[in-house]
Image (cartoon, rainbow, N blue to C red; front, side, top):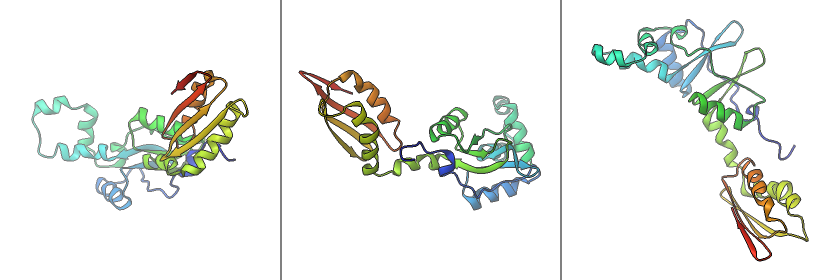
Length: 220
Protein backbone atom coordinates (compact mmCIF):
# COMPACT_ATOMS: atom_id res chain seq x y z
CA UNK A 1 0.00 0.00 0.00
CA UNK A 2 1.25 3.48 -0.87
CA UNK A 3 2.57 5.29 2.16
CA UNK A 4 3.18 2.11 4.16
CA UNK A 5 6.63 2.21 5.82
CA UNK A 6 9.24 0.04 4.18
CA UNK A 7 10.48 -2.95 6.13
CA UNK A 8 13.85 -4.66 6.26
CA UNK A 9 12.57 -7.26 3.77
CA UNK A 10 12.27 -4.50 1.14
CA UNK A 11 15.97 -3.59 1.21
CA UNK A 12 17.93 -6.51 2.66
CA UNK A 13 20.38 -8.67 0.72
CA UNK A 14 19.24 -12.29 0.54
CA UNK A 15 22.41 -13.74 -1.00
CA UNK A 16 24.62 -13.82 2.08
CA UNK A 17 28.18 -14.88 2.87
CA UNK A 18 28.13 -16.95 6.07
CA UNK A 19 30.52 -19.33 7.83
CA UNK A 20 30.47 -22.13 10.35
CA UNK A 21 32.13 -22.09 13.76
CA UNK A 22 35.22 -23.91 12.43
CA UNK A 23 35.99 -21.47 9.60
CA UNK A 24 39.68 -20.50 9.87
CA UNK A 25 40.97 -16.95 10.30
CA UNK A 26 42.33 -16.56 6.75
CA UNK A 27 39.08 -17.80 5.23
CA UNK A 28 37.22 -15.08 7.12
CA UNK A 29 39.56 -12.39 5.81
CA UNK A 30 39.32 -13.71 2.26
CA UNK A 31 35.53 -13.89 2.41
CA UNK A 32 35.19 -10.30 3.63
CA UNK A 33 37.51 -9.15 0.85
CA UNK A 34 35.75 -11.16 -1.86
CA UNK A 35 32.24 -10.13 -0.79
CA UNK A 36 33.29 -6.58 0.13
CA UNK A 37 31.60 -6.77 3.52
CA UNK A 38 32.73 -5.77 6.99
CA UNK A 39 31.20 -8.72 8.85
CA UNK A 40 29.85 -12.22 8.28
CA UNK A 41 27.28 -14.22 10.26
CA UNK A 42 28.34 -17.45 11.92
CA UNK A 43 25.77 -20.21 11.56
CA UNK A 44 25.27 -23.75 12.76
CA UNK A 45 22.93 -26.56 11.84
CA UNK A 46 20.69 -25.64 8.91
CA UNK A 47 21.39 -21.94 9.21
CA UNK A 48 20.71 -20.73 12.76
CA UNK A 49 22.74 -17.59 13.51
CA UNK A 50 24.94 -18.00 16.58
CA UNK A 51 27.28 -15.05 16.19
CA UNK A 52 28.94 -12.51 13.91
CA UNK A 53 32.59 -12.02 13.02
CA UNK A 54 33.48 -8.45 12.05
CA UNK A 55 36.65 -6.71 10.98
CA UNK A 56 36.91 -5.42 14.55
CA UNK A 57 37.04 -9.03 15.80
CA UNK A 58 39.90 -9.81 13.42
CA UNK A 59 41.99 -6.70 14.05
CA UNK A 60 43.50 -7.76 17.42
CA UNK A 61 45.49 -10.40 15.51
CA UNK A 62 47.40 -7.61 13.74
CA UNK A 63 47.32 -5.24 16.71
CA UNK A 64 49.18 -7.74 18.88
CA UNK A 65 51.48 -9.10 16.17
CA UNK A 66 54.71 -7.48 17.39
CA UNK A 67 54.20 -8.53 21.03
CA UNK A 68 53.45 -5.11 22.62
CA UNK A 69 54.48 -4.28 26.15
CA UNK A 70 52.71 -5.66 29.21
CA UNK A 71 51.47 -2.14 30.00
CA UNK A 72 49.75 -1.95 26.61
CA UNK A 73 48.25 -5.41 27.02
CA UNK A 74 46.80 -4.49 30.42
CA UNK A 75 44.94 -1.58 28.82
CA UNK A 76 43.16 -3.85 26.32
CA UNK A 77 39.96 -5.72 27.27
CA UNK A 78 40.53 -9.42 28.01
CA UNK A 79 38.16 -10.30 25.16
CA UNK A 80 40.42 -8.48 22.67
CA UNK A 81 43.47 -10.29 24.00
CA UNK A 82 41.68 -13.62 23.57
CA UNK A 83 40.72 -12.75 19.99
CA UNK A 84 44.33 -11.94 19.26
CA UNK A 85 45.09 -15.63 19.89
CA UNK A 86 41.95 -17.03 18.20
CA UNK A 87 42.09 -18.81 14.85
CA UNK A 88 38.48 -19.90 14.17
CA UNK A 89 35.16 -18.13 13.71
CA UNK A 90 33.77 -19.76 16.85
CA UNK A 91 36.47 -18.16 19.00
CA UNK A 92 36.47 -14.84 17.16
CA UNK A 93 32.74 -14.16 16.88
CA UNK A 94 30.68 -11.78 18.94
CA UNK A 95 27.85 -13.77 20.49
CA UNK A 96 24.92 -13.70 20.84
CA UNK A 97 24.52 -11.99 17.49
CA UNK A 98 22.58 -8.73 17.25
CA UNK A 99 19.90 -9.51 14.68
CA UNK A 100 16.73 -8.06 13.20
CA UNK A 101 13.53 -9.54 11.79
CA UNK A 102 12.53 -9.06 8.15
CA UNK A 103 9.26 -7.36 9.15
CA UNK A 104 11.01 -4.69 11.25
CA UNK A 105 10.74 -1.15 9.93
CA UNK A 106 13.84 0.56 8.60
CA UNK A 107 13.71 2.97 11.55
CA UNK A 108 13.72 0.04 13.99
CA UNK A 109 16.69 -1.52 12.20
CA UNK A 110 18.55 1.80 12.26
CA UNK A 111 18.00 2.13 16.02
CA UNK A 112 19.25 -1.43 16.56
CA UNK A 113 22.41 -0.67 14.57
CA UNK A 114 22.98 2.56 16.49
CA UNK A 115 22.57 0.92 19.90
CA UNK A 116 24.85 -1.99 19.01
CA UNK A 117 27.30 0.21 17.08
CA UNK A 118 27.39 -2.18 14.13
CA UNK A 119 27.28 -1.62 10.38
CA UNK A 120 25.38 -4.76 9.36
CA UNK A 121 22.67 -6.93 10.89
CA UNK A 122 21.81 -10.55 10.10
CA UNK A 123 18.12 -10.86 9.27
CA UNK A 124 16.54 -13.90 10.92
CA UNK A 125 13.13 -15.55 11.14
CA UNK A 126 11.26 -16.39 14.32
CA UNK A 127 13.48 -19.43 14.92
CA UNK A 128 16.77 -17.57 14.41
CA UNK A 129 17.41 -18.95 10.92
CA UNK A 130 19.36 -16.68 8.59
CA UNK A 131 17.25 -14.99 5.89
CA UNK A 132 19.57 -12.20 4.76
CA UNK A 133 21.66 -9.23 5.83
CA UNK A 134 20.82 -5.54 6.03
CA UNK A 135 23.49 -2.83 6.04
CA UNK A 136 23.63 0.88 6.75
CA UNK A 137 23.71 1.52 3.00
CA UNK A 138 20.53 -0.51 2.58
CA UNK A 139 18.71 1.60 5.16
CA UNK A 140 19.72 4.79 3.37
CA UNK A 141 18.04 3.69 0.14
CA UNK A 142 14.81 5.43 1.21
CA UNK A 143 16.58 8.75 0.61
CA UNK A 144 16.77 7.89 -3.09
CA UNK A 145 13.02 8.43 -3.22
CA UNK A 146 12.05 11.16 -5.69
CA UNK A 147 10.84 14.61 -4.61
CA UNK A 148 7.62 14.23 -6.62
CA UNK A 149 6.73 11.00 -4.87
CA UNK A 150 7.41 12.53 -1.46
CA UNK A 151 5.35 15.60 -2.35
CA UNK A 152 2.35 13.54 -3.41
CA UNK A 153 2.39 11.47 -0.20
CA UNK A 154 2.81 14.44 2.14
CA UNK A 155 0.06 16.37 0.38
CA UNK A 156 -2.43 13.52 0.31
CA UNK A 157 -1.71 11.85 3.66
CA UNK A 158 -0.84 14.79 5.90
CA UNK A 159 -1.31 18.32 4.58
CA UNK A 160 -4.77 18.00 3.03
CA UNK A 161 -6.34 16.11 5.99
CA UNK A 162 -4.87 18.49 8.58
CA UNK A 163 -5.33 21.73 6.64
CA UNK A 164 -8.33 21.17 4.33
CA UNK A 165 -9.56 23.91 2.00
CA UNK A 166 -11.24 26.33 1.91
CA UNK A 167 -10.37 27.28 5.49
CA UNK A 168 -6.69 26.76 4.70
CA UNK A 169 -4.69 27.51 1.56
CA UNK A 170 -1.40 25.61 1.55
CA UNK A 171 1.39 25.24 -1.01
CA UNK A 172 3.83 22.36 -0.77
CA UNK A 173 7.36 22.27 -2.19
CA UNK A 174 9.95 19.49 -2.02
CA UNK A 175 13.57 19.93 -3.07
CA UNK A 176 16.30 17.37 -2.40
CA UNK A 177 14.08 15.76 0.21
CA UNK A 178 13.47 19.02 2.10
CA UNK A 179 9.74 19.70 2.45
CA UNK A 180 8.56 23.31 2.66
CA UNK A 181 4.94 24.09 3.52
CA UNK A 182 3.75 27.64 2.88
CA UNK A 183 0.43 29.44 2.95
CA UNK A 184 -2.44 30.14 5.34
CA UNK A 185 -3.97 27.77 7.86
CA UNK A 186 -6.94 28.05 10.15
CA UNK A 187 -5.29 26.42 13.17
CA UNK A 188 -1.54 26.81 13.68
CA UNK A 189 -1.69 24.55 16.74
CA UNK A 190 -1.64 21.63 14.29
CA UNK A 191 1.71 22.68 12.84
CA UNK A 192 3.85 20.69 15.35
CA UNK A 193 1.72 17.62 14.64
CA UNK A 194 2.16 18.08 10.90
CA UNK A 195 5.92 18.57 11.33
CA UNK A 196 6.25 15.29 13.24
CA UNK A 197 4.21 13.40 10.65
CA UNK A 198 6.13 14.85 7.70
CA UNK A 199 9.50 13.99 9.26
CA UNK A 200 8.28 10.39 9.60
CA UNK A 201 7.70 10.10 5.85
CA UNK A 202 10.41 7.98 4.27
CA UNK A 203 12.83 9.99 2.18
CA UNK A 204 12.19 13.31 3.95
CA UNK A 205 15.43 15.03 4.94
CA UNK A 206 13.85 17.97 6.77
CA UNK A 207 10.61 19.97 6.94
CA UNK A 208 10.06 23.71 7.10
CA UNK A 209 6.82 25.60 7.72
CA UNK A 210 5.89 29.19 7.00
CA UNK A 211 2.17 29.28 7.73
CA UNK A 212 0.04 32.28 8.59
CA UNK A 213 -3.17 32.36 10.65
CA UNK A 214 -4.74 35.78 10.57
CA UNK A 215 -2.04 38.18 11.74
CA UNK A 216 0.01 35.40 13.33
CA UNK A 217 2.67 33.37 11.57
CA UNK A 218 3.96 29.94 12.57
CA UNK A 219 7.54 28.95 11.76
CA UNK A 220 8.82 25.41 12.44
